[in-house]
Length: 254
Image (tube, rainbow, N blue to C red; front, side, top):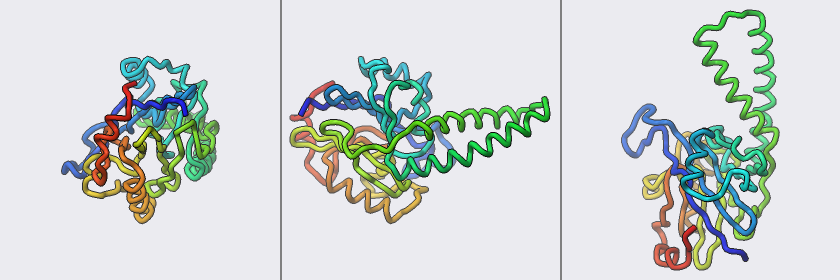
């Protein structure tokens, strides 16, 4: 197996962190973005920040150029996970099948509504501030539609040592990536585990589409991984395992 390396490009955050006692929107939410290098494959996970912000993060955190990225993996269908995906037009875009199917169905309906709205808007040249905001939303929806048309069902293995790991619950197709390095297993969790506080307290994020599935996925993650890259946080060690020594011994800097 070729050497596998990973690096967090951008640490994610919740818009409002309930376990910090926050209520209402405290900040702009975004997902953790990770780069995986496995042989000739370079995989970006959840390019969540807008492209104009993610690009300098890429340049400051890694020597890999955007046009060198071979694959983009999205841990869920949440639109906030792929705002910067246009930086990687030459890559193949992947998502777990269950969420890809939902995204495609929603995309078809939204496309129809968008066309109807465009016809209504053409009857009037007047546009107030509310219409401008609405148009901005529609533009974002159109970008999401492009993702829904292009994205493909993720295979069970994206590269040597990089395996799809289903974590349904938050959405039907929430999925992480399991990375195998000698003597340690790293799981990129997506929103199946969002922050270190949620991990420590054994809590799943809300809202989620199935609490029961989300709780089961949480338990499976704890059973299989030594190290987590959390959906809205940094790299943390599994509190149920003595992972630190093994990970530091076997991992190598990127």
